[in-house]
Image (tube, rainbow, N blue to C red; front, side):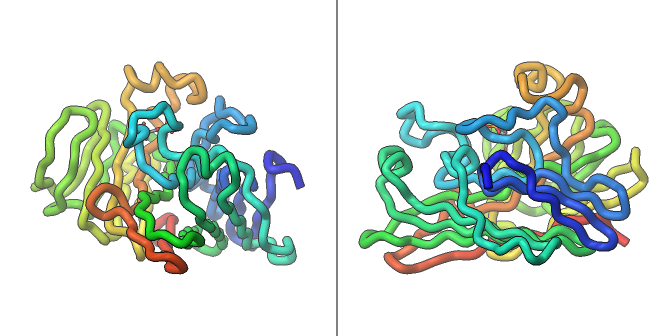
Length: 274
Ligand code: TA6
């Protein structure tokens, strides 16, 4: 099956979509209401990431840590993964990515990734990382979840009060003393040492979304704001107002350190409250 052929997922109350390209869940809606956000202008191009859904970030988060011009957020979301499941369960899909000559040239470690997605009242996504080499390695991972909100200006994220974060938009490391994160403009915060469930208060659509997780100690909250959004050719006009990223990962001080043969699994559950 071509990596850029959509895989439809369904249950009685929810529907979704995924691609072997990037091991990428692109859509999830419950009771007809979209939970994930997918850009109307996203590319579906070999070697390029899809804008929206749940991008898989590996083996580094953000810009190339070695400043060698390697792709931001690593290479996993740009690669064609292998479909693992047999397609017999309409609510479940699984993909695998392993090292090859191209990845080894970018990152000299043998690895195995398995991404699974299961539809139910919520979307459950897991990411397993295995060290298949003979040397230990460290890596950063994230499920870069894009959520739909009715209006970012009326949205807020709960669950991060008391956690420390690095502010990528305005600089510095801070302790978050506020009960919620709001979005007066660009917000780009990497929280570390946090395992809490986050709740997205979507006032415009009169709903609350939740992002629960296990095996993850970092949470990133991101909205580009108007000015930065204008630079994204793969984001529809004005769509920045209808998305918020609440990303679950292991970043910076929470990076994974895997001995040969060791593995680590992160799991997230995304959905609407009630
Ligand atoms: O998760 C937040 C972030 O790191 C932002 O700084 C912004 O770069 C965003 O990810 C999207 O990155 P991308 O490479 O998908 O355009």
